[in-house]
Structure formats: C-alpha cells, structure tokens
Length: 303
Image (cartoon, rainbow, N blue to C red; front, top):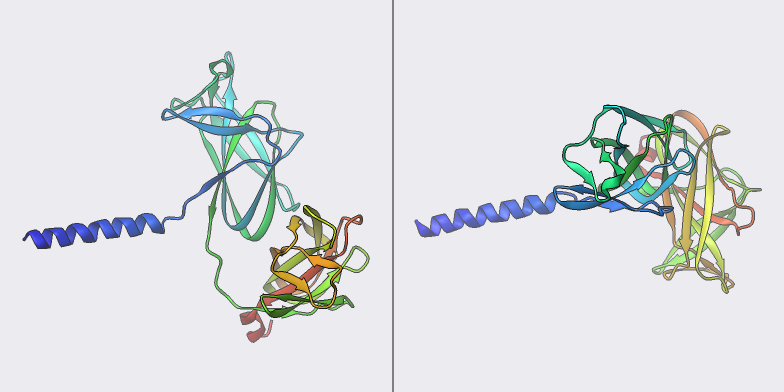
C-alpha cells in the first residue's frame, strides 16, 4: 500500500512539474527612452511603471512572435472626479496608428503609490497586441485627455510555426552577394534607396525578409537602419532594425566588408497579385543585404 501511495505521489509531482514547465513565462520590458520609474505597490510588492506622454512616444523593442500586454493605470489626484477615461495610441513597426480606449476607470483599492503624495492609482486596464516573427518597434502615446497614465509592458513569447522556407529572387536587377556561414553558401541581394528590393507575389502568403547591414573592416559598434515596406506603391510599414558585426558569416570574395548579424521580419501579403518593395531610408548608411523567402507549402500550392 505504501508503494502504491508513493507511486501516486510521484506521478502527481511529475505532472505538476511538467505543467509548470509547459507554461510560457512572460518578461517585463523597459521602454528604450524611459527616464523615471514609478513604483506601484501591489500585494506588498513594488512594480515598475513608466508614465506615458501625449507628445513623446514610449518605444518597446522586442523580437516576436508573441503577445505584448500593455498594463496601464491612470493617476487620481486629490479632488479629482470619481471616474476617468483615457486613450492610448499604438504604432507597430511604423504602421497605421491603432487607438485603444479605457473608460469608467475608478480608483484602485488594491494598489498604491510608493510616493503617497502622488495620489491613488486607477484600476488596472490591459491591452494586448499580437506580434509576428521578427524584430519589432512598438510605440505608445496618450491620445486625447491630459490625465497622467503610467504603463507596464509584459511580453510572452510564442513558439514559431515550424515550416520550411524557400528563397526567391527579386524581380528587379539587384547585385547578388554570396555569404559563407557555418560552411554553407547563402545568397543575399544588395539594395539601396536608389535600387530597392522588389518582388511580385500571389497572396495570401507570408514573405520572410532577412536583412544584414554591411560593415567596413574598420567599423565597430551597432548600425541602426530603417527599411520601408511598400505594397503596390503604398507604404504599409517601416521597420527599425539594428545590427552588429557577425562572427559566423563572411563574404565569399570581399575581405574589405563584414556582414552584420541578420534581422528578420515577416510581411503578410493579402489575397491577389501584389508588388512588394523594400527601401532603405538612411541614405548616409551603407547598402543593406536582403534575402526573400516564402513558405515551401506556398510553392507547392502554386501561390
């Protein structure tokens, strides 16, 4: 009987451990331009929040896929009305602004400021944003209203869908550049503001874009660059990317340059035939290397 009880206990412990390990953990992110941390006390523990501004965006940089949760609290000061409302404007990768609204917010009975002179935090109001694979820059600003609002940023990564990708060639004349990485040859195309990277696809389909900055041999540090995406001559996104010198990739025949570490983003091409253009926006930077890929299943299905 003791052996059976011990066996059941062991199985329960193993099951609970496996369940705990299977839960994806989130992490809290700090805005790149944050200057002042606001401590909010919840259940006796201090949580870091950051004030949002109506003029200066708070920027979060993160690699997807995953879910970004924006946790917000309005600030009630003495003599203020019983309820408040506010708006938050979100822009993902330079795309169209998205407006989120919080209404009928009252004072929290579970939270307080570490600095009691600030008043009382409002009830927690959450907003969620799903992020696709690749690097992302997400900016947040306050919309209409002058009430102070602070925010916290929680990111929960998701597993990328396992699928095979096939490289495709651009339709416009671009300079082919061959890199050697881990004893394999990889083809990229050099593109610039004058010669963008262009392709034509039948959607719906995902277009994976891999980019690398180019370093001269004497360059160190980080190169920040922007890539604008046009769909049928209409701007749909602007990706802000960063790259360091790669330690695993090299040019096949050019020893004067060093490729940067690759950055990835995904473009969801809608149904129908579309022209996609990738245009570097920083004319003072070197040209950018690009590689275009689509899912293998899309090729098999004739898209």
